[in-house]
Image (cartoon, rainbow, N blue to C red; front, top):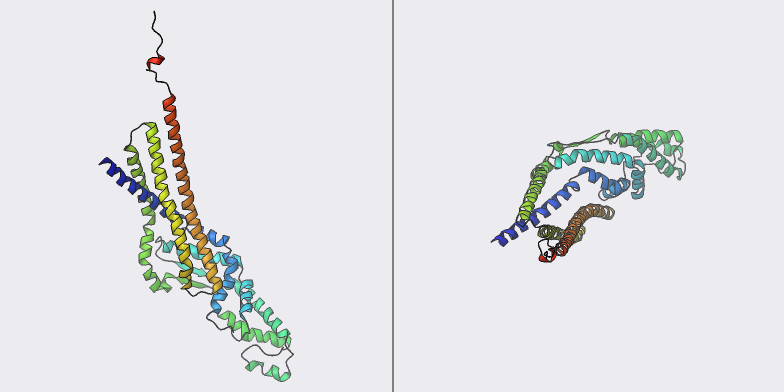
Length: 342
């Protein structure tokens, strides 16, 4: 009966140990905004995102923009040079600071403010230089072509005089183009009622994660204490039992982590393929998700390996205690008594 009780208690301990390990590491990786910020920075997201975003945009948009003869390469180069990584990092981290508390159930509302206003002037300057370079390769406009420029909705097929060109850029292209870029974009939970409704249940679950971690950890400690109390206080047996508990409990999450990581990495390409993203963005997103999962499973494997080695060390110590106990002379032995007086 005692053996059955110990087996059940030990199974509960292994389950709680694995649960605490996985919940704790999920809490410091997937659900940790500072960890996500660090991964975004280390993976070079802010340097690659402008061209990747434009690549995604071009999948569903016309290559012409307000009559400007901008090809795919031109748009990517313009986005890459006009959106500084520092600005993109600042806006992204501000958005993360708003959205993470909402997703984790720590806040009931979020409001993300994006300020593209600082980019407008730089965008206007670079776009003007680009168009000037395009027009410089064309033949000069005749007087009749100059008179017809006002009726032409796109970039002219000839090179107008300097004063006409400046007026043309100001009136036709940049004014309308930059007016469509707001000084501030505000996104909040009020803008996406359908999405926020779908997130209601997951947010309630996420709100329970810290409570679940604390409860599981408390139950784990109590279970461990009960397991220790079931064995005699002999130091050798006690040490060997602790070794058995630690090594056996660490093996389960260690093996499970190796199996799960292979399955997830095998399914990821198939799942991302369903999103129909451009190849460059698909590969980038796959690489970024893998880097986060790698960190998560590396943490688990490192922690379980340390606990396993600790259990192995205690097992070696138990043998040392056993041999030491055997080698110590028994003070009550007759061989150690002095000879009787004659």
